[in-house]
Image 1 (cartoon, one colour):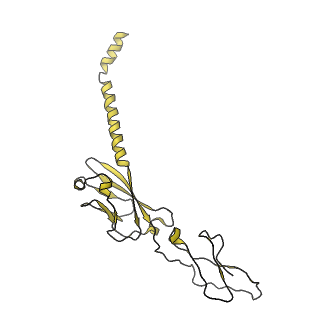
Image 2 (image 1 turned 45 degrees about the vertical axis):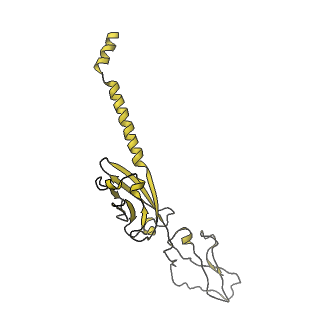
Image 3 (image 1 turned 180 degrees about the vertical axis):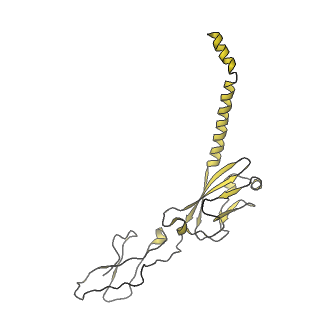
Length: 204
């Protein structure tokens, strides 16, 4: 039995070294993944002008300016074209073309542009998120410009007639609506008390 054990050991003399190399390789890959998977976040107002500063992306990713061109630094954004771009001379991320929050995200409470930053030699991939903040750039709109109501003269005081409210493409405080009625001795306006419109908009 001793002989057989000795013989088996001699058949795989580098088994321990192989295991150590694989373990070392695993930790190296894990270290690279942790470094590259860290996410950087910025924010920008929608409709910001071309050239508007967003962030010092090279510095925040730990990259040297002189290595951006040799390492083929590039930014990719799925299906969003070139809304954001990087100046390879100073490593600054800036607005390259018009960003319309409503076009990107509709009325969603959250809206972000997700970028992949790629550099070669050695290959590294970084994930960057840019939050697009809403501005009050959309006017309220009524579905129709005119509504005809037929009211019997016998209707009692405080009778209510529902009206269709306006809509606003902006969100949050920018999407809050206020209503007013032109001066009238016969009618008043009852408006919703919250943006959830618990009470309907009504002519009284």
